[in-house]
Length: 164
Image (cartoon, rainbow, N blue to C red):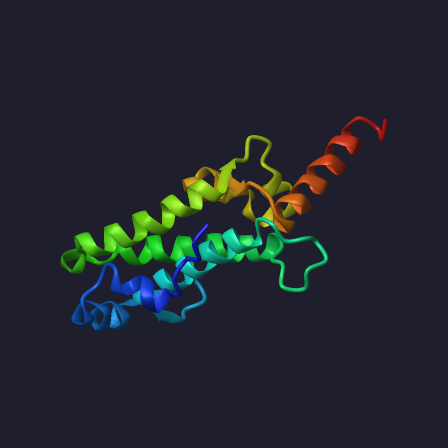
């Protein structure tokens, strides 16, 4: 597979320079009260999806491997992107939609539906989010985060069956 571009190069596929400046200045307030530019949040989502792809073949002992907490961070970022896009109003453009659709499609190809809610088992605080948005119901096809989720699900299953 060809390497995916860094966020800066990826942005240039979708946005003219003046649109980049405008989106970076467009504030998105997150629950902590901090504000980030929509462009930065979109770039962070792209970078996390890119990283997920890179992790698919990593071993669990690789020091650069991302785990479940990193996956949750990526999904929270996707929530923030969604929040920002919802507030764009007249600033909303086809370019924003196209860039997000690209990153989302790559995420879908690298993940699958989590039919047993392994993510909620591993990170109980995300349990309510599973019903909110489609990205909370997807887990990586492989890689360290997936194996971590599988181990949590196995422990849960063994606990229910009394360890038999």
